Length: 498
Image (cartoon, rainbow, N blue to C red; front, side, top):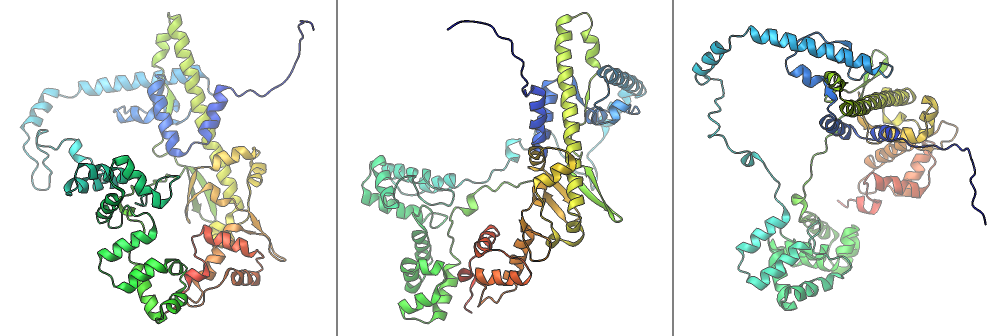
């Protein structure tokens, strides 16, 4: 063994912080990008939003630096700073001149003498008369809060309320009483032991909770949930018997089997099934907070004549520029100069990265529109098979880049708003014809199901045969997979007897 030094040359790919930031910005959704830009505006004093400056009343004509949302990559930092400083100086002079022309004393006097707005005006009153900010906020009622309020209003004693609180704390999103890793029949004894109450008393307390609003909450399974609701509504013994003993056949719509076991007519079973179908299998449905999901398209596709044009959506996006205010602060202060130069480099790289992101999304969208032109003209049946490699080769980028560009990005087209990933589909072989996109096959299956006889729905094998007539050759398991992806039930569950 010996200790020695050795020189070696090698090449390796290093991810610089700037490159990591560019990749991160590329895969962000539009809302995430806007939030990131606003955060950078707060943290980096060198960055400014052109729109905010315009809103402050500067009426001077825009300079090239202010007119462009993103500074061109080939523009030098010194040119940008000089142009921005000139823009700010001109705006300040115009604002001072305009302010000097206003007689502020007369304006304030006239404003104070004005009375309430007549007729169609809205009188807001003083600030003391207005409701507080907290009074204007709304909040969806939570299931736990709703049940705890009912527990407090009930005649349960302290120990019983402790058990009831444990029950409410172990409800899932559907309103069922479940504990991970514990059998349903062992849930109540476990909670009873924890609350220090007798298991038999715990069952009675649970029955009381199940009659709270919503009816059937805290049930341990679907059967118990439906039985509680049926008993509460006073339904007859036949309904209770079918729920209690034949729920599996009812779920599979096997009405003949139920009729045979109960020795009744199938019409009667069908009527009972319609009644049971009105019950709520998920008691907590109305208490689940479904926040609206807003989609803002990243690009627009406009049709002008016979051509389609792709335009980036800049609405609501801050227009960044580098401020010239800090140029004077760099003189005579080495520490401030180093700090400001670092901030300027960071700001310039952010501006270039956002500009590159916008251009990349536009290029990829233009390629998609070109390859899927028949879809935009004729509809979803003409969607072509396309994979990431097809677009990557066309625009000269890596497949991973295309994947980042199309994730969480939306395009507004004359046919609706779609995620960019929607246009990428695997190919399904067709006899003597071009391949067809998997999304088009799904739509073909949907049309077949919509046009079937409700009393004699098509099986998956029958759908395979009907697709074969259209020269679409797929396996039965593929039909089943596509059917489940679209939320279409099996033929036995789609069948209607009357």
